[in-house]
Length: 127
Image (cartoon, rainbow, N blue to C red; front, side, top):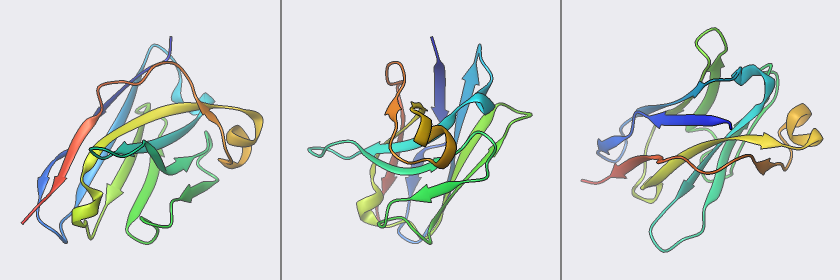
């Protein structure tokens, strides 16, 4: 089973920054495209970013474009989400997942999260 562990969340003021980490255990992360998702209270889970296994393709939700940057360090078997200029509406639990699907693997288009969701990491933006 693909197991991913999220970390790096916390409490930050509007305009602040955080870097989230998604670490894999028991498998090579570079075999998969990885998506970052978030779920705010009372809202559906949404995908905010994705990166292919090679790191050659990335994409972002419009709501985070220009503020968030996804990257990966395959040597450390970890994917990161650098979040800058945080807004109140970024408050959510953030999750990462390996994505199934050929288009997801090649271009980060679509894709179904593999396995079950982890615990996530809480990001709270508040003044």
